[in-house]
Length: 430
Ligand SMILES: Cc1ncc(COP(=O)(O)O)c(C=O)c1O
Image (cartoon, rainbow, N blue to C red):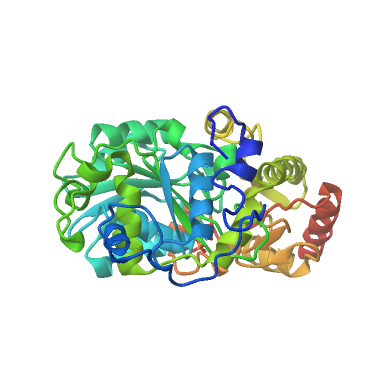
C-alpha cells in the first residue's frame, strides 16, 4: 500500500509497510525464512555492500518480513525509520550505541522497568558508559544532571511498574536546549495511546514482547527514529556526523540525512552487535499489531474500571493508575496519552509484603509471570522478582516498594477479573 498520511491508525496497523507478495500474490506477509539472498551479479553485490542500493544481503542485517514490521512500527510512531532487534533490552543498547563512547553518560529516569535500571546502572559500565538517575518530575534536577559528557536523556512514557506518566514535552525541551536526543521507551503505552515523537522525542524504543505482539509469544524490540535530530549540529555524535571508521569512513548523516540513525543501526548496529530479530518473531508481531488499537481500548477500559473498584476495596491502601481522578498524573495523562492511561498499575496492599505474597499465590485467573502487556491478566510482586536486584530505596523510587504488586490488566471480562482479585484479597487477609 502507499502509506498516504490520511489513513487512520486502525488502517495503518493492518496495512502499513505491507503489500501482496510480488512473487506469489500472497496477501499475508510471508515469513522469509532465509539467511541469504542471491545477488543478481557482482556489481549488484558491490552496490548493496556500499549502501548505494537498498536490498537484502544477509538476515542478520535485513530480512523482508522484518522490513515490513519496521516500516509498520515507524509509520504508527510517526518516525522515518525503525530497526527491529531481538528484545526490548537489545533495543535500548541499539539506541544508545551510535550516541555513546567510553566516558559518556545518559541521564535516565528513576522510574523505569527494574531490568532497565540494572542494565543502565551496572551492565553499560562494561562499555565505559554510565547513567545518571534523576526523578524526571524534577525538571531542574534533569537540567542539573546534564553535563558535557551527556549524550542522551531516557525515560518511559508510562513507566513500568507504577504507571507513572513522563512529561515528554518538558523533557524534550530540556534535551533539545542541551543539543541532546530524548529517547522514550513507549512499551507500556504503545503508539495507540502515546506518540512520543509528537511530543518532541528523537528516538522511541519498545519491548515488542509486550503489547505490540500482545499475546506472550515473542521476545523482540525496536528503535524508531523521528528523523528530526540534527546529528551534525555539534561534534557530540561523531559516529553519525563524522567519517565512521566502522564503515570505511562513511559519513552517515551527510549521506542519508534523516535516515542516518536507521542506516547506522542496520549497517553497524545489527552487523556488529548481531541482536537481530528473526522473521518468525516478526510475523507474530505483525499479527499482533493488526489488532493493537482494539486490544488497547479494552485494556484501558478494563484497567480504568478495575483501578476505580480496587481503590475503594477495604484491603487496598493505594492504586497508582494514572486514569484515576486521585492520581497526580491524571491531568498529564490526558495530554500525553489522550486515549487512556494503559493497562498497567500497582496496588499497595494493607498487610505489606506478606499480604502481597499471599495475594499473588491466591489468584486463579491472573497468571503469576514476569511479563506484561498480554491479552491475559498478569500479576507479579516486583520487589521480590523484576526489581529484586535493586536497593529498597531504588525499589521505592521505581514504584516497586515491598508492599505493592504490579498488575497488567488483560482483555478478559472485567467482572471475572474483579471476582478473582476480590477472592485473592480476602484470602490474603483471611
Ligand atoms: C518498559 C520495559 N522496557 C523494556 C523491557 C525489556 O524488554 P525485553 O524483555 O523484551 O528485553 C521491559 C521488560 O519487561 C519493559 O517492561
